[in-house]
Amino acid sequence: MNLFWRNTLTLAGAATLTLGLAHAQTPDLSDPPDIEGDVLEDHGSHTLRMGIGLAESSPQYLSVKYFADILDQRTEGRISVDIFPNSQLGDDVQMMEMLQTGSLDMTYPSSSPATTYVEELAAFDLPFLLPNRDAAIAVMQSDTAQRMLDGFEGSGIKALAFSENGYRQLTNSARPVESPEDVAGLDVSGLTIRTMENPVHLSIWETLGANPTPMAFGELFSAMEQGVVDGQENPWSTILTSNFHEVQDYGSETRHVYTPFILMISERTWERLAPEYQELVQDAARKSAEYEIQLATEYDDWSREQLEEKGMQITRLDDEQIAAFQEAVQPVYDEWAPRIGEDLIAEIQEIVESTSSQ
Ligand code: KDG
Image 1 (spheres, rainbow, N blue to C red):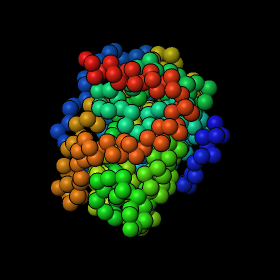
Image 2 (cartoon, helix red, strand yellow; image 1 turned 30 degrees about the vertical axis):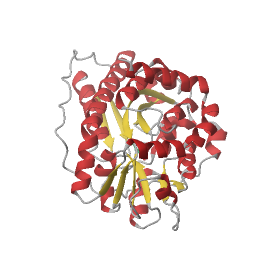
Image 3 (tube, rainbow, N blue to C red; image 1 turned 90 degrees about the horizontal axis):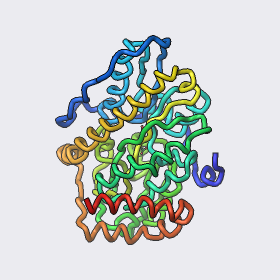
Image 4 (cartoon, rainbow, N blue to C red; image 1 turned 120 degrees about the vertical axis):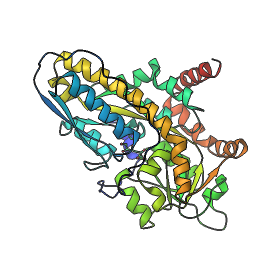
């Protein structure tokens, strides 16, 4: 564990089960791809416990069900996956620690709190680095990203695949936000914003004049309900499937950061699996991650429309308004780019540019 990174954060304590009930409604979703391949030879039975932060209707949960179905079908039920949604078993930070000790088999955090294990992951936290989904996907599928997954080696965690959490959007209960000035407040105080446990995110919101508070995702709904924080930022699908519209009146399509998820397994669990099972788990992880990206894409705009229908006042920012945010967070780049690594950022920018020239 890198102490420098750890010390930058204030951990917000244990996750509690405070999310609203899961939404039953979903957009028109693609069916999971057919499960192909023979049934594997019997190498013993395993039950894998997987904890995730999000609700049963989220793209993350639905893709994990597909992951479980692949393992079930290819082993005739010898590998089963028990999924615990809604931060029931803890938050991203706690569940990664449980993977290290072997008290939990699998989890699926955002890359942002995982920067305590692999610092290079913080490149994803730089605001406005990935301008569109094609670029983001190209980066997640690149050798650069594979190097980041390999960087977990020796930590007690094996990182299997990247997928999409998505473009993060700001919501709050105080006022419509169209500009950095609205975040900072002119005659009123800056918005109190919950962030993930990640120093770059703290820096973004401090720079914008907000009062950022890192907090576990599982505590967020009640923190907003009780007015402990004014707002938060997450992809529209998470805002909808976690029922944040019940406690947040305003949304702004800021798209300030694209966050990936990382599907991971405890190294202890991994080592207990026969090589043929390991290969299957790795393959199922990649396939379910691809499916997750597909679902997250299908959810994104649909979720924003649903939120509007449910009464959230959503501001779509034009290019000029986005540019104002981009300019305001330039100091975050200046502070963090040298610490994260200029070469790494240049590598990512090259991948981004190669997608725009296609
Ligand atoms: O399962 C993932 C969630 O725990 C979390 O990563 C969601 O983006 C998230 C957040 O804001 O904490």
